[in-house]
Image (cartoon, rainbow, N blue to C red; front, side, top):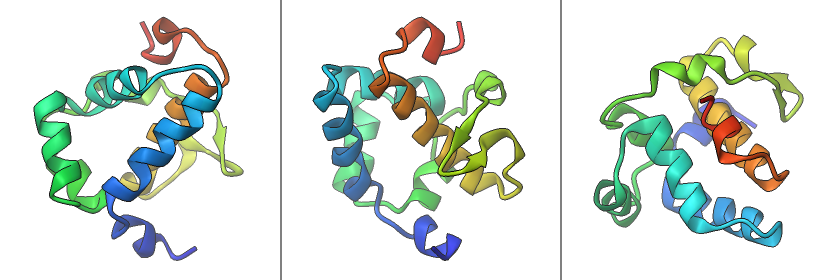
Amino acid sequence: MDQTKVFKMPFATVYPLYVKKVERKGRTKTEVDEIIFWMTGYNEETLQQQIKDEVDFETFFQQAPQLNKNISLIKGVICGYRVEEIENPLMQKIRYLDKLIDELAKGKSMEKILRK
């Protein structure tokens, strides 16, 4: 898939898929939100506004209040790529988020997911 297509994809389209994925594995929307808050600095109100405004991934990350300084601690493979080796900064952030959601769905503790 062309990377620019992913960048222009509305976050509001992908967010419910994240929630659905983790709920099938017994996790919760609240945990998905906690991951997003930790990674981006959004809170409940600002996250819901981004979803309501149907911003794309590029805008979602550009407008993030504060990216967590520990996101560089996220390591591993997602979609066949090592997240720490992805060269495009925006694609790397998208894949970091994908990786955290995968870890949640696989049953990792929130403490480990949030790199505490």
